[in-house]
Image (cartoon, rainbow, N blue to C red; front, side, top):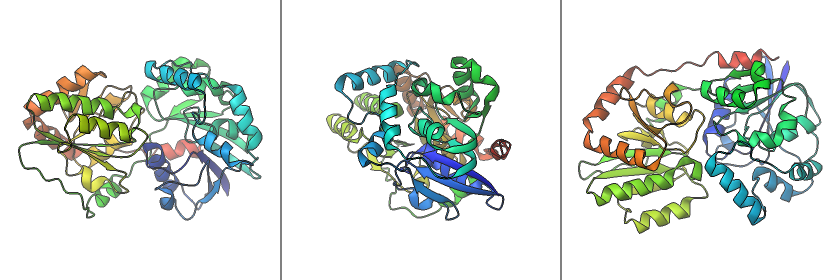
Length: 387
């Protein structure tokens, strides 16, 4: 039986983690023995890992090193933090991770005493899983996932990724961004559609939830699902809705997720007197009964790969309002089943305002989503093909 290892960070609520879970469930366990190594064995999705998966925590001699590996900004100097923040804001694809930082963590990390036929860093993003994969894991072949159009993190781990046998990009757009930056890897970079189970999502959407939307007027109900981090753009969503409320528009926005920006968002909601208009619901293990009640799903990220949350909303018949990211047109057909806005605050404002003024268009979008379907059966074959 062939042996496959997946490496990731933790099992916190997020698109990467949900994609990983679906992939783990889909692999044929009669032919492949699957092991999952997490930097930290924690997170609300941890108990959803299939019982036929062997799960290990990455071995470290020092728990402080584990925290640093999980969070590259852990205890960095103010100058280092600001340099990262500027790089993040302006999409500088040459973000530099100090080799000394990686080497110090590798010294604290223990090798994994098992040999695999295939080992995959699923998290990607220039995460510590990449150096660990190439320095501490024994495998006949090694591969790396690319989940986002912002590939700046890979620059700091180039000396490791150049040894990879394959790169799996979750969209055509991510593949193009990566191979434009690293043309030397073009021949071994393939598109890998994330595993998606429409029926499972629709079934979970039928479960009961204590959260029911109470609409007392003709408000349009928006919903979003995502980590409360700068990338996801929830801060500019609050700013846009504050502006629209000042102009007399009625709406409700329910945000599912948690993260480092929660307190900032709560303050923004309070400052804008939006407590009866915007609701931060925190993590919800099953968000689908909530998403299914909405008129429209908001995906207003500053950058993305190919977010599963968009497909999840569409599978429930909820049209998507999205900012332009590299793969957006692979997911949303503007004016047919959703709305695509340019990726800036003014375009978001104008787009949501247009939706509020033309809410009958939402019905048309929903009608066009009745035939929504997605197939990614070939994705697993790309992993099996490496074995």
